[in-house]
Image 1 (tube, one colour):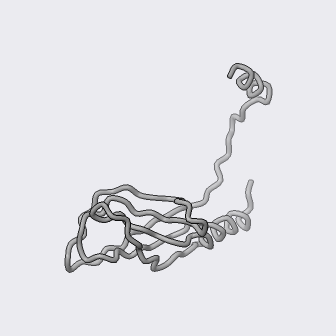
Image 2 (cartoon, rainbow, N blue to C red):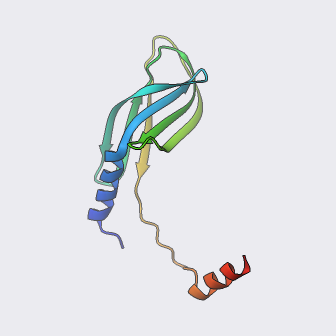
Image 3 (cartoon, rainbow, N blue to C red):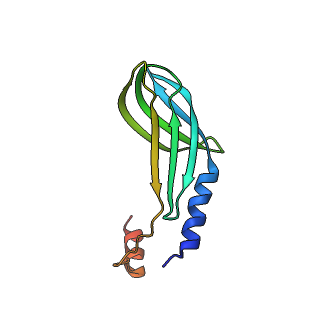
Length: 115
């Protein structure tokens, strides 16, 4: 079982590497403002991104790391209208998933030979 300490470190690592957000609005990728990135005690990373334009059709929200690699995105169909602010939020939880029926080393070798 992975300790809470390590799970929290992984969540903090992810938070520290979030560098940029963009929003695809009316077919154009524009910079979004990362308002806040929080990590809770339950290994939940919350990212809040402000939409910079006053109106338009949002088709994707993207988050990039420090190297410029796309790390998460959310395709959507949202209409932003004048007079209302729009903040996109991502909730990412780091969890441990135990595999109760692991593959046999012998089975894995046989599968590789067949390929």
